[in-house]
Length: 600
Image (cartoon, rainbow, N blue to C red; front, side, top):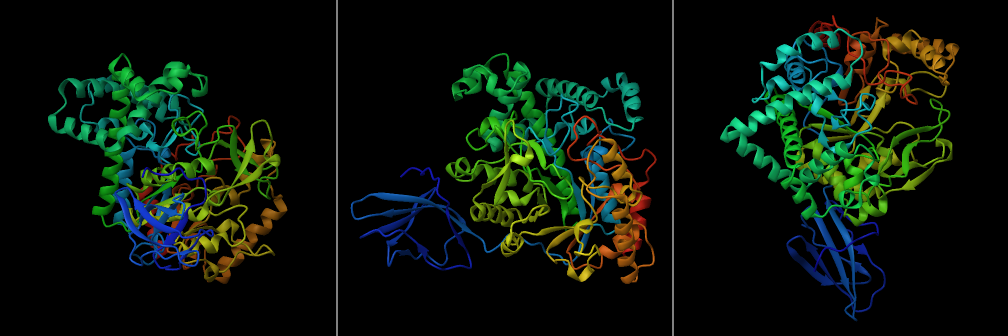
């Protein structure tokens, strides 16, 4: 029997729950359970219930109920572990960075995977358990303003700008002599010019690819073919999409019909023709990105880092990107995702990305969700799901309307959690849910039952009267931090810089200067009451290290005293979001050693 196309919410069976499944009243019914290998269990329906085997393996099944008239009713069944993987450590800390912002003598004006390796070595030397990163998803690298890691082309592939081209075996080292002056000039600026970086890196990778084709070693060639075979049809389609996107330079829904909806034969024809070299180049680039990030992951394990890489997954994707093209019935491209009005954003937010369509997701047996988490978990010891409330409901805004006019779209929560828990246990990867903003009643408790960690931000952990909460009020299975990329840095918050920036941009800061004075005073009071003798960022770290939270995340921006925040929500061109480099003279090692001493 072929796989059924399901649109009803799946049955979810957790390994510790042996309760029978309720069924509609069907006379003389029997049931059978199928997986990809065929029928694995049969039985009869008793009292409108199906009693499944207690030792049922975790996996994906179809439950068929066959009536007396031989009519078959099928429903997807997810056999899930009791909860997601929760780690094998007590309490640790990780360093949070924006990878693109790292400065080094070696890189080409943007932090890369070799910089990440160096940072992992440094972290291991001072007792840090890992590095938290911005999303590494592939973007539209040729568009300098499309640099938000939270508005990706695809969540399934990596951003090639993070490749250290000097570390690619086929790199033409003679060619760099022509670029040294341009690269040095670029690195002297405070803001990253993504267009220049993309131009240099992609041109260098093209030269490396030519060398690989002509003189690549047999070992490398076999490894490349293994990678292509492992990633299969998905990589093949991504390479096709990228070539067509750059050829037509318009949204995919405006492409000619045969290009927009290609058959396998059409893609084969493109590969056999002039586009073949370009498609193989895209695959070659993704292979090298994978190799370098995998080396970072392996290094973290070798160094004994308890968390290793802590990767972020964006809540949505660009409507004109690969994921939305490849799974067009799973993404509703004319409905963007955002947030309703709240105290920080009184007009609401439109994030300019699209999310999963629940009906399409169920028709695809939640495979796009599985592929999304698996693509990050293969490298990570922990992942963070941006806006995790989207697993239960997404705030969506139809095209042409404002965020105030949005509405909630219900999502298959337990089925999604079952998939995430399955993949989490396979990869031994902790799952953190970014549960900030408008949170449904009981949602955090439900996630906790599934082993999904919380994300606790000190700036939001306040009592009704404005006091900062005591350390004991925090949750053990949580990542605790002072702020996020969408909030002011410690130095910016303490100096009111963020309020002045928002006012200059014509935004409502959501807080008056008087209220900020009161907040700063409340923070100082909490530190004093906690017997912490310093009122600077190190004092905040000391306080957060006394909470029961199992992971403390410390931002490198805050350690270096950076005043500007990474991203000001609600701005695109009016503020240089996602483009700031860390201070050129920053001594990461010195600051990190001081941090380690403070925590002790």
